Image (cartoon, rainbow, N blue to C red):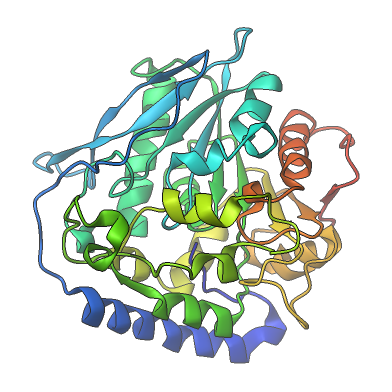
Length: 372
């Protein structure tokens, strides 16, 4: 969920502020949580309910490519549509979210169902250190190592370990979008990127408040029985709606669901820098779709508009190579965690329509190509 880069030429002041914000965030997290290493352990959080066409497929992964790197278990669920497909979407949740972000509270907030109805398979993961996946030492779980893990997921989906798909799309939410960019830039093995809940240009005030609302997961009543290792963080009870939800348009029960289903973050995840994030995007050559809630309090404000796709294109076009195909969709009256709002079906339709109509006119007015 964290993003802190400003590519726009007229945003030098905010860029300098964020360069100071990253070490501040690290310092706060280190003071709160410490850096003691711990042995990996699985979370006690139960997976979401099974559905027809979905099956649990965990994967043994390493955080680095070193031959002696320890293995960890990544929890994953492969869902297949009714008809045979060669396309799979890898669904990467944001900071303090598990794979349940992609299944939502009910049918209208279930993005996975929309992907399947469009004819694509979906592989949902609990990112390493979250949910039902193993928990490596906190300082080893970084954007770089999570990109390495995601690369292993994509390889397994292509080589028959999990599936044998020829077309792989990475779909991220918030910090999951950062990981998707890092993986695509480093390994160049995806065919398209969908980046939801992420822009390079943040609201510094809101992101600072969010960072200070992270505290040791071991102190949170939700995790009292699972003994999170030191360096594992989570959001303070009651703080999430102010960052993630538009109170006027979130679905009924979203705030309670969001608190009940939250997971952990790590101190290592707070160490990526603005330069890192910009380097990722400037190395991406596959088509990219941005999807942003128009009332996302982490990225949208006066002077940082999100009202139209043109706003997003204007804010993002300098962060990617000129030849990279960019498109944008804004979801009206929707906060940061798009899938928890009443307009979630609009976002789901925008994504699946774009994925299936990249080379023709989109069938929805929500999506616009960024002409550069």
